[in-house]
Each structure stands twice: as C-alpha cells, then as structure tokens.
Length: 419
Image 1 (spheres, one colour):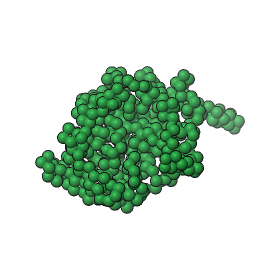
Image 2 (cartoon, rainbow, N blue to C red):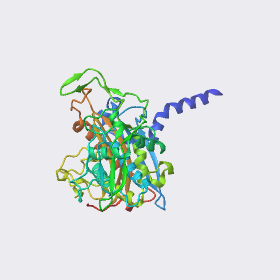
Image 3 (cartoon, helix red, strand yellow):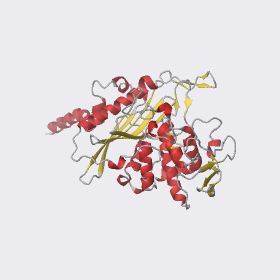
Image 4 (cartoon, rainbow, N blue to C red):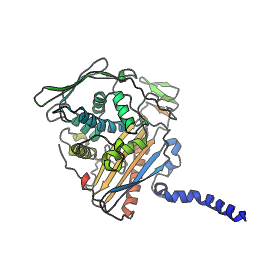
C-alpha cells in the first residue's frame, strides 16, 4: 500500500525543479534563448550576478501590490556598491533636515562646509548653482544626474558616519556599512570617522543652524563572504601586490536593502511605517523629478558634455546603447547606479506611461577578468553594461505582454523638466 505514495512523492520531487522555475518568471525570462546573456548566466559565480525583479499590480483604487522574484541572490556575498550608496544618503539628508526643525531651514538653504582637521576640505561656493551657493538640494541633483562623488561626500559629512548607519539600521536596513567618502585622497578608516563642521544660512546670509565636527564611535562590521577578492591589486602607479584586494573596510549595502529603500520612497504607503523616510510631499516630488531626470534636462547644474547620453547613469534597459541616445519621453527610470572596481550595480523603478508598464529591477555584476584590482582593466563596455541593458529589455518586453487586470495610473511619477 505504501508503494504508490512513495512513487507519488518521487514524481513530485522529480518535477519540483521545473515547478519552481515556473513559479519564478525571472528565471524563465533570463534563460529564454536569444537574449544574448547565456555566457553570463552560465558563469554566474564568476560574474557574481544577483538580480531582483518586482512585479507591480494595481487594484481598482490604483493601490499597488508587489511580487518579487530573485536570481542568484546571496545576502551574504560581498559586492562593492560604489555610487549606489549615494541614494540612501540623499534620502537621509532630507530626513535629517526635516527632523532638525529649525525655522527657515530647508534643502535649498545655503550650506557651508568647514574643515575641522586634515585632510578635510571646506566649501562655501558652488558655481553650478543658480545662486552660486551649495545646498542639500544642489548636491542631491548632482548625485542623481551624474553620480557626483563630491556631492555624496558633502552629504556624508552632513550626516556623519554613525548617524548614517544607525538611521538605516533603525529602519530595518541592517545589511549596510557606509564608512567612507568616495574618490577623495588622504582619508583612511580613522579620518573617515570624522566629519566636517557645517553651517546653514537663511536667505539674508544669517546663520540659522550650525553643526560642529563629529567623531563617530560606531564602526559597523558585517560577516560577509568574499570580502577579500581577486589575485592581486595595483598599489601606487604600477606595483602589483600579489594578494587579494581587501574590501573589509569598504562600503556595503545589500542589493535587497537598496531595492527596499527605493521602494520605501516611491511607494511609502506600501511599506511598514518604520521602513519609511521622514519626507514631506514636496521632498517626494523633488526626488521623483531628479531621480528620473537626464543630464540634458538640467540647467543648474548643467552638463552639456552629457547632453546626448540619456543613459549616462541609466544602465538597466539602455546600458548597451551607444550615444547619441535620447530615451523616449514615455519612459522614465527612477534609479541609482554604481560602478567601480569592476562592479556594476543598478536599482531602478521603470515606468512606461504610454503602455501602462511599471516594474522594479535591481541587479549587480562583477567584470574583472584578470582578477587584478585598481589596474583600470574592467570589462564594463564589453560585458557589464550590455548585460544590464539586456536584462532590462527582457523584463520590459515581458511586462509589455504580461496581462494586468487594472491599468496603472502613473501620474504621480510624471515630473516637469528643467531647473
């Protein structure tokens, strides 16, 4: 009597992989023949590929529901997020301003940064701003338009290392380690704990809020795999050090955390209250505008050198395209990318207003064939960007065809150009 039961179980186990694949449309989409990414998917461990795809469906009241699918996601695997760390810094900078609660203080208030100790540097003017004044708003624009490193560093200095990490942990984003400025010489682990004194001014030039130099006492450590990578790295001009490159003292944000932070800002009503950022309605509109803007759409700051590169910091969907490129007006990509040390990352919400398409997509890949870091030899153009572009296209085509009971109303995400 037990044999049929055993046979049934065996049959279920035999078909389980195919059943699981059917339940994960991301795997089906990626492994479809002819999409040009077979060589990457056949070597996901080598390229350290991780992908998250989130379908969004609306009810009759236009309220969204979400279903996420993953491919090779490994929350314990280290990857270098590079400039993707700028996204939560922008969110938290706006939140901190709101929580300071000083009359007249806002994201447009002139912000002068001092220098408390070497190698800190001061800044009191910004020639890219219409009023030539640095501000939180101006730094955030630069972060999303062209991924400006100095803009992130100034927000890092306003936030402070300890505050930056603790605020994210409190919101549940605990697989984060934001501990250093980007692409600025002279800073080590100790000096990155110290952040500059800052003063905000009102429209008449009167100081309205001052923050002294801060020394952060919390130094987050995460138990992650492969924090030592490669077989060597370049030190100085050309010296090759024949040992793995050390990422133990480098920034980190889990891909899932980046995805969820983006979701919390685009769809705050769909996440738990403690996961949200303390933002005003005007803050949300400001972020939606600049997260999706192209360099050609900005006057202050202005980037004529990128006027024909709509995909300059839009890797998913258009990463494999060469300039000149103008992305169609009906498509908007709300995202943040990262690119350094051979790692490429993009976390995005993609909306097609004309066809009623919306989805979230986050992906990372490492391209470093010679396994040497700091040699400038990374296969970004040959492998990384084409891969991210093609997976975005594959998901987009799937979404165009995926049946939806209710067509989404996406007017919330339509923004005006300019400024």
